[in-house]
Length: 330
Ligand SMILES: NC(=O)c1ccc[n+]([C@@H]2O[C@H](COP(=O)([O-])OP(=O)(O)OC[C@H]3O[C@@H](n4cnc5c(N)ncnc54)[C@H](OP(=O)(O)O)[C@@H]3O)[C@@H](O)[C@H]2O)c1
Image (cartoon, rainbow, N blue to C red; front, side):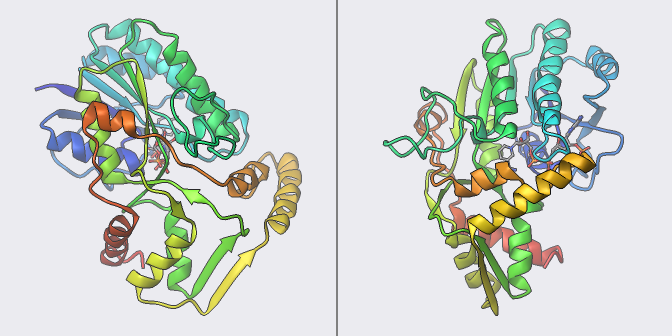
């Protein structure tokens, strides 16, 4: 049986990658930390490998013990207290990990890196209306810069069988950020920030897991792919589907002007500099909120892996909302 290691297996995307890898008949090793939740890793077939990327000696010892055919490096951070931590967790730990693999596992068939569309930034200044591989990457936040730095390092490794996926907004069961919108909506509050019409891009987590496994098990190497379901969604669509499938009408609809948000973000950052903690609402978040277009080119995915997502935002949110209800999140 072919062996696959999936890092960040305890997280939202990671747990679905594990499920998809099991469906493909692979021997699945979930890379987790001692402290990681195993709530969504209950299948008896899953083997566990303790991989805390802050402890490189331990990672080295663990990777000397089992030889893998494939590795999906999905562990990463989307929120940190200090901006420089993005480079520690998303860039340095990726390059350290890949270096250990190059050293210990020369027969590895694939190292799949889960990057982000944030590495290239939005398509706001592109007249064609979407971002593609040949564009000059212009991330607008430190998270995107840290993902891009890891990508650049991988692309510099001429004999390493890497593959890079850059998902747009991933949503689905178990996810906790987009969920906050639905939770508030369910309590009667629909909140939006700013009036800039945005063309959002999403991918349902199960479609993402499928295409990442397709790529990982394919012969393709040293290539990068953006991942979305191919549609452009106005931000209001979240509210539209929330109303339809939660069967609720919010009693309070608020739209906070972006100028107000910018002021709050500036104050928050000032306080953050004193406390050493980056506030959730910060100047980079404001840039994201101001951006207009997150469309990406998925033709390479279609050409190389016959990518045809099974879900659009409406069917994906319907399934997600049903899951929230069944699991008493709502
Ligand atoms: N969600 C999205 O919309 C989205 C979009 C584009 C790209 N991505 C990328 O997809 C990947 C997964 O994201 P997610 O949304 O599933 O995030 P998540 O739920 O927060 O999962 C992150 C995973 O990384 C692990 N991890 C973080 N730091 C680690 C360390 N130092 N050592 C070992 N493990 C560590 C976490 O382990 P613990 O459980 O122990 O904390 C967790 O399993 C990330 O690389 C992210 O950048 C996500």
